[in-house]
Length: 107
Image 1 (cartoon, one colour):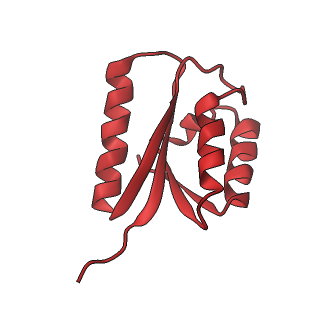
Image 2 (cartoon, rainbow, N blue to C red):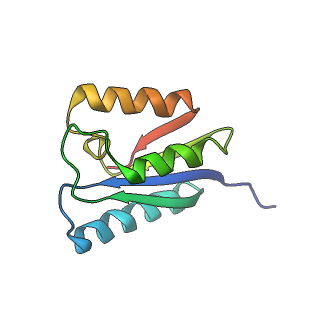
Image 3 (tube, helix red, strand yellow):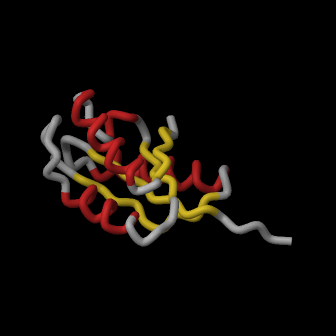
């Protein structure tokens, strides 16, 4: 008997463009999804973000994608990938929660 896997998205936001580190985060999210029987739909990456900024093309696409799901998980390596600024992180979490997404910090 097979069990249905819950949909999950990944989100990585970094202040640089170090592809080796981004790939490591990607692999960590994929491993977490596998260990927790989650089906990764897509992993979005924002490079060279300014801390505290909401101008994030990858996050915008993630939000649009979440609108197509009744519920989904959003995996992030650490809470700082949402934002290192508490007020911005809180705003992003509120937006994702309003879309019935559950944010999971994988570290």
